[in-house]
Image 1: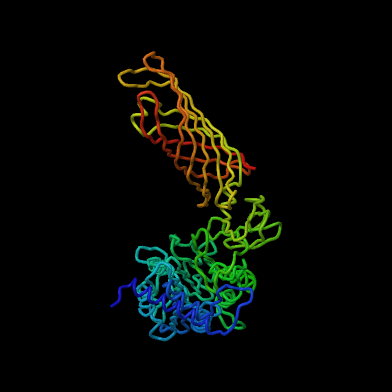
Image 2: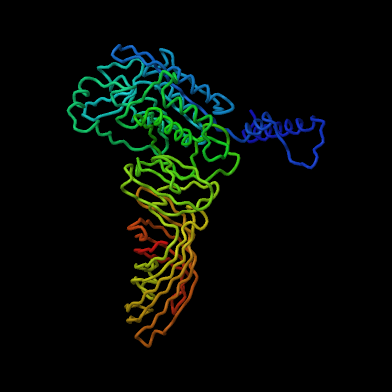
Length: 554
């Protein structure tokens, strides 16, 4: 058997020969264009050598159930086949493999879980794209310990034994998160409200009727850090089938979205773009009674393409798919764009974004921002961060190297100023210039001599900082270059007065949050490296600084 590297080179040579052969047999002369034009087949040949990732989908639809207490569904099987068709279509999903499970044996609990185990064998690369879709009834049940769980109804699920015979949604999410792929999406075309595509047993219906709230409190579950979860409706709402569409409503519009919802115009449709389209259309068709939801902690680029390929830089996109600002209304330049979570494409340039409560009474944010072509701008970063500002810094600085701490300078309080432009390069990337000064009387030991000394330190630096939003805060960090000046004035005549200035290199990290519209608070730490040569001390040293920061934003 050929070694793997040699085999890859051989394939590359064959592909190149195929491409060149294809070009040489055209019998045409290129006029004014010396670039190489590849046919679709030729492109695929090159792709097959260098790209080993796969696109795999498992699509499940269940209309009929063994237990007659579950009402039959009309379009779940059609949902599965319709979605499979668009995923298979080379114009749209171009998935390598679409596994459709609609038959009696395939849609049992064991059959569905077996398909998941098969995915573990097929998913060999972190770059594989995995989509798992299921259209069926949803339900709720309490486990032995009394916990309320969400379940998906398989063909053989027993109405009176739901925990043992249905598919636990939390376990399904956990199993999918265990796959190697970093590009996974779970689509649940079901609900857990007791209406529409959901049924609850008698005990839960009785319990629900006694609640003062409109529905049960949603069970606490960790949002998967590896899987985007799309649901046909929000917690406590019904997911609907529609006779005019002959589909589950959300599935119908998700398929439409895959075909045409390239909202930022980059040539590809991502899972969030398709979901945003389906969410909006479902909301309008059901007159607000059904609001599809999304669980995601994706930052930066949405890695899951459902149609097309990225061919160009797209429009800037404002987005938030966390639950921190759920149901808040987004307005751009005074025009309502929808409710969070969602993504909004805007034109490059300056815009004003407002973030308000659903009733319009509470305004969280209303400021100007700059959007650049191709950028994805997290809304929480705008809300919790700031573009630029001047800050007052109060902190503490000391050396981690014992020889310097003992003979040159001990930890001392520092006071400083800084100017930051956090979005100079992009919405995430900016710079910060800082200066700090401290002075203290300290007891130092230089050689065998111990003496009090007046010690002062001045530091200055320039940092390149990357920012991102986490919950109600913005985190930042990056490299820092600068300088450190130390002046040592001992009381003893045996130790000379000395001053040094030395370059420094290090890193800084911190978090900040809005206190008021124009005021931010931050906590920051830094570690820097410097060469210290003063008196009898000649060493390389690390020093730390910890600061509390009050910023005035503008």
